[in-house]
Image (cartoon, rainbow, N blue to C red; front, side):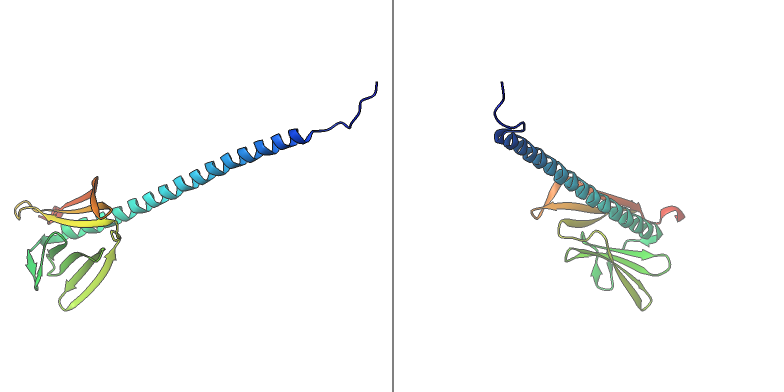
Length: 167
C-alpha cells in the first residue's frame, strides 16, 4: 500500500515550534534586561561608595588638621549647613552646603580656593554637627532624600576629632 503525501512537518507543528521559540526568546530578553539593570544599579552604588570614601578622607584630614571649629568667622556663621575650621597654620576651611552642592573653601591670608565635593545632588541633604567645644568631635551627615524628605535609616555619618593626633 502506498502512502499519500510527502514526508515533513505539518503547518500546525511549525506554528507550535515558532510559538515556543517566541516564548523562549521573550523570556531570554527579560532575563538580559534584568541582568543589565542589576549591573547598572551595582555600578551606581559602587560609584557612590567611592565618592563617599573620597569625601570622608578629605573631611577627616581637614578636621584632624584643624585647631578649632569657631561659631563665626568674617561674617560667616557656622550652622547645620556650614562648618568653619580654623587651621593651626592660620588658614580657614569652610564647608558650605548650598543649592544642593557641597563646597570646600580654603582661605589663607588674602588668597582663597574653592572646590566642589562629591556629595552633591538633588537626592542628598548635608548636615554638620559640632559637639560641645570641649568634646572636639565634628560630624558630617549625608541624608538620602526621597520625595524631598529624609529617608529613615538611610544616612551616612562621618565623624572626626579636631586636632587629630597632634593634640
